Length: 322
Image 1: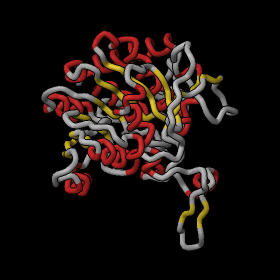
Image 2: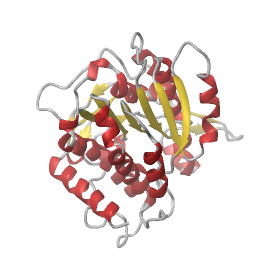
Image 3: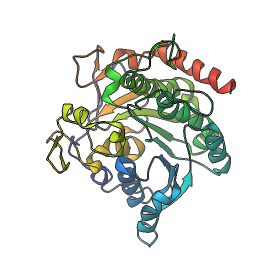
């Protein structure tokens, strides 16, 4: 984070992704949105393509993006295509990188998993949440670095969460190999790692003209909650009737509102040149002490430069060892 006053914008928590780009022309810009076939990812794609960008939906099942591709098949806006990418499988990441040609103006690292109930491992033997939310995106961004550099002033956006407030990265046992696996602890750590990723990019790739920032989309009901049981959802304020129909509280956002901060960071001229920061509700967040009490802001442990460098080195080490 910068030592100057926090950046503010005229937008609010209820601004939609499309409203962020009102009057912005992204014609000729090429962008990738991981996990862009549903939820806030799909709304991110819609806003970027609606402003004229050429957007690639990177998803495990490209067929799920068929409706989005068709939506932008006609004249008058940008275009959408889909491509296979499984962030939990580095052979898939390698194949995606090898197939990409030409400059890349924005990479939106949107895909993620939350609170996987049991400790699951990827083909490389990595814990699933850290692998999907952080290590896969690290490998993807690193593989596309030359393409980002070729774009000139490229941007990387990493979707994090207010969960980063709750837990620093455990460098002694990041994969839960010795300590008992706990779904939420693993999720909290992976979201902290996401913020540290943008701090690392800001520190390592600034000379390439690449900026990176993290986005907290807020509370939105999407497929991300697929591992949560009814009791957990009730704890978040979601109510259910006898038929199982869910009603979300007023503080939840729509997917279009949840995508707004990602779109701001990916394409708005208001954040040109800003890097290494964490945004929520379309504003740069205040740095706070992490722990159970804060509900907003970015934890000091999530933007610590020494931790960012240490995590960067760890990611390079485990990628080299695969």
